Amino acid sequence: MKIIFHTGRYFLLLAKVFSRPEKGKIYFKLILREIENLGINSLGIVIIISVFMGAVITLQTAYNLENPLIPSYLIGLTARDSMILEFSSTIVGLILAGKVGSNIASEIGTMRITEQIDALEIMGVNSASYLVLPKIIAAVFINPFLTIISIFVGIFGGYIAALTTGAVAPSAYIYGLHYVFIPFYITYSLIKVVFFAFIITSVPAYHGYYSSGGALEVGRSSTMAVVYSSILILLFNVILTQLLLT
Image (cartoon, one colour):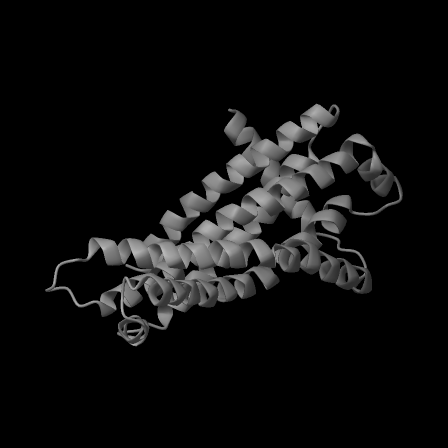
């Protein structure tokens, strides 16, 4: 019953978020601020993770394809498709769910327990829309750019691994990057990222918005926000893969 209760209250919050917005000028400033907080400030960790993911994929593939009948350029193809299809969208999404999601839940939760949200409501401001909508728009806008950067950086990380370890010839790796490229894979990855960005912002915002008690409860809300965001990302990853790649 708790799942039904929280699901219903989550959609009621979304209805409030997307209704009766404030002035567009105010939202524009808030969206720009959230793009910096949620996207640009996450660029460093996305780059670091992507470089190592690309390198590890390349090395593991190379060490497990020692059969002389298997062409070495498949290592580059595997690194490319792995980064595009899964790692740069889903894995980075899970990382951002931990970093961004906990930040959103704790920020809004703190505003709730310090009665700042109540003050907004008293002033006639739609607090849900004012606090949550700019975060959703900012994440949906900036996360696809983070994913594209992650793809390129991850592929470059694989090239650096090939160049420095000798696990695969750099020329073969580059050939594999060009081999049988399917442009729809990029579209598929970006579609997933949009859904994940919505989850990463809306679910933690829900947990923060309905926090109660004190600092301990805000911490619990942040933890639950990360857990449920991660579960939903994995669930929608399966659903979207089934819908888009079959």
